[in-house]
Image (cartoon, rainbow, N blue to C red; front, side, top):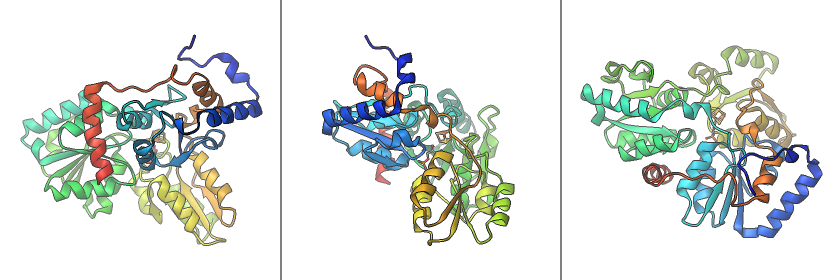
Length: 351
Ligand code: 13P
Ligand code: SF4
């Protein structure tokens, strides 16, 4: 019999034994199995991934994978997107079923509907297209797809803004305030052309003149970074380069040399000249891995900030899902939600 809670005996297993058993599963299943790993995952998990990437790349890999079983080592919104994009007959699993994302939870479907109703009341709803960050529920993605909008990730947010402008519309961005503001500023918007939408205190008046409206949600892993940390690092490592993920506060992005998705940060570290120092503001597991992979330069975390949800997936969770493959932790998205969300995700992949 299988349950949806990992049995206790898995927690005490020897690491070497677990590695051996996971390898056996991979050999036995061959092309029927595809393990995807987000860069923020622990090394003990990412070591088994067939593909590693940022959330955009993993969505692409998932959409083109031929495997019958896709095990997504990441957080729920990523596995949900993969399940929505999967072909019929493909099944997607999330090894740590409670690995959510607090940022994604900051936009609830009823709040999104209420926001659109409020915009309608002041006569501007049709001026806007929703752009929804990948870090959102399937219901929010469907809301967006049904209203002509697109999903984006941190690596495609700029393209999504261009896509909206090409349709002579304005951007309503959910749910990450910082990515919305940072993208708008990078696109040349003035700060006073960007309005913040507080879902707990909706005020449609702010949307009347704004070129972009951004939802008041945030990622605590990235808002942990401060300009004081940037200054300290610059003083400690004169000549260093500072790069951060765009979920960081706009002041931190402004104080840095560059910002971009996890793929961007990885490439930045790899391309930096030997002997240089690169200070990186994003999830700590990922930064520490980059430091190990690039021993010819000094890669330093801006500060230690761990994503507790990404950290939830351990080797034991991966082994358990493979032992019980098909029986536990499958991600399913209801048909009506899945079709609207797929429309928005397909738009993202086509941007
Ligand atoms: P990426 O889109 O850069 O992979 O980031 C995902 C994420 O969750 C960042 O917090
Ligand atoms: Fe969510 Fe932030 Fe963790 Fe990314 S780092 S999964 S946005 S909580």
